Amino acid sequence: SSRYPCFRTVPETYAAAQALVKNYPALATWQTIGKTAGGNPIYELVLTNKSVTGTKPRAVLNSAIHAREYATAELNLRLAEKLAAEYGTDPDTTWILDSQEIHFVFMANPDGRAKAETGLLWRKNVNTRYCASGTNKGADLNRNFSFGWNTGGSSKVECDETYMGPSAASEGETQAIQGLLRKTFTDRRGPGLTEAAPSDTSGIYIDIHSAGRLNLWPWGASKSAAPNGAALENLGRKFSFYNGHDPMQAVGLYPASGGSDDFAYGDLGVAAFTFELGDDFFESCTNFTSDILPNNINALKYALKVARAPYQMA
Ligand code: 0X9
Ligand code: ZN
Image (cartoon, rainbow, N blue to C red; front, side):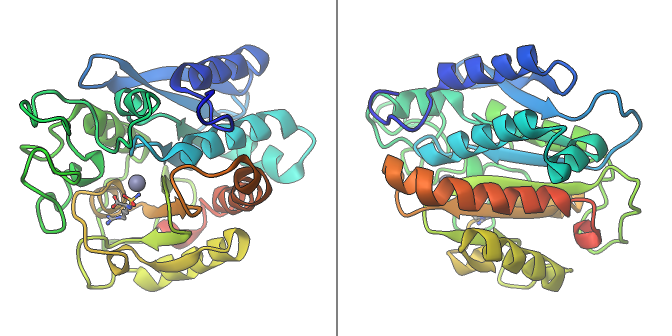
């Protein structure tokens, strides 16, 4: 956008995704996964070599669930563009797209993002039912997921930045992501159960946020270690090797319930991480291009390579 020149707007992002489908029809699919509070569609892009059929392990990469976290959607889109462009020449990428399905949600909160693009420091969705007489309308989508909803670190006050919503998964945006995760990761094993077989539909979920340079893993609402917290920590530390982020259990940032990471891990038994990119919501083009983008592309590519490793055991 003109205000933030390194970060494409909602319509620019959708146009770029549709261009991928047009230019790489053997790899790319663009489809609707749900609707926002304002009635607008929420989309996903799927990348995989469609001529290799059969059940493949999956990865879901989500971004911009918090409206003002600009660098997150651009990173996610740049990764998709890079994977499509280097398929057939880069051996890692060719392996990733032959053997796995990668699901990208670039704009998980497009109404909120469009509002942020008008110059506001917007975080929540734009559900005008909440905070009707105030200005800070909407719910914090990363407090609205149904696993462990309302178990601390989220607000019941409608005008607050971390308003959890009136009930678990009350928001269309939350329902879209939960629905995508449930349909993509069909095991529904929940935490503490058995290791996945390599041929099943498990994989990895990464929710991309900013800021703070952190790689976070569940739990985010409870101080207790996740059932396979040691394996999650091990993987989080490997991501840190690529992106330079500090690795920690999400609760170490602050306790917050109803996050999408805890849902993916707790409800579905999928290895789940939250990346917090960079130092600010508005990164300079220099920081983004020279640091955040290349280092996190490497971390995410590594994540896609190991998505079918037994880390998804929960
Ligand atoms: O508070 C959040 O939702 C995330 N940080 S942010 O500054 N981008 O708002 C962190 C979420 C970590 N995960 C959980 N607490 N479940
Ligand atoms: Zn965030």
